[in-house]
Length: 271
Image 1 (tube, one colour):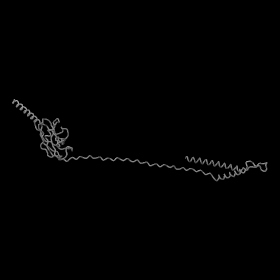
Image 2 (spheres, rainbow, N blue to C red):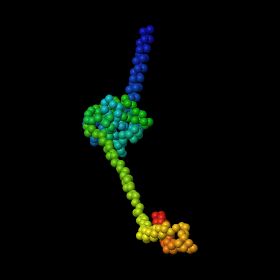
Image 3 (tube, rainbow, N blue to C red):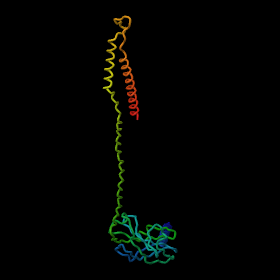
C-alpha cells in the first residue's frame, strides 16, 4: 500500500516535469540587444535574436508604443524600403533553422505617428514582433522582448485647415426705373375764325328795308280812290320792291358764304 502511494507520486512528478520540459523547449524567445536609449527623428539600429523557432521564413517588425496603450507606431527597413503598414510579408524577412538561434541587426525609425500614438517627448517602450510564414504572431512573445526607451521628438502640431474665404456674391445690377415718357401735348390746331358778316352793309340794307316798310306802311292795302273816283290811286311800290329784292339777294349770298365758312371750319377741325 505504501509502495503504491510512492509510485503514484513519482509518476505524477515525472509527467509534470515532462510537460514542463516540452513546453519550455517549444517556447520561442525574442531578445533585443544594443538598442539606443534615446530615439530621435533619425533612423536607429538594434541587435536582436530569435531562438526556439522552427525552420522557415519569419518576418520581424519593430513596435514603438506608450506603456499601457496598444496603439503601435514605427517603421522597419526591409532591406529595400521603409514599411509600417498592415501587410506582414513587407517587413524584414529572416530564415530560421530548427535548433539554431538567429541573430542580426534590425533598422527602425519613428515614422509619422498620430497625436494619439505619440503625445510628446517621454518614456516609451520598444519591442520586436515576429510573424511566422503564415502571418501569425504571439503578443506575449513580443511583449517579453520589450525594452524601455526615450523618444525625443517635437510634438506634432496639427496643421490648421484653412477656412475658405467666402466669395462675395455679386450684387444684382439694379434695373433702372424707366423714366416716364412725357405725354406729348398736341399742338392746338388753329381754328379759322369766321369772317364777320359785313355789319355795315347789313345795317344799311336793314335801314333801306325799314324805309321800304315805312313806305309800304303809309300805303294802304286797299286802293284809295282819289278825288277822281273814276281812277284808282297808283301804289308807289316800285322802289321798295327793288330794295326788298336786293335785300333777299344779299341775304342769300351771305347765307351761302356763312355756310361755306362753317363747312370749311368743320373740315379743318377734323384734320
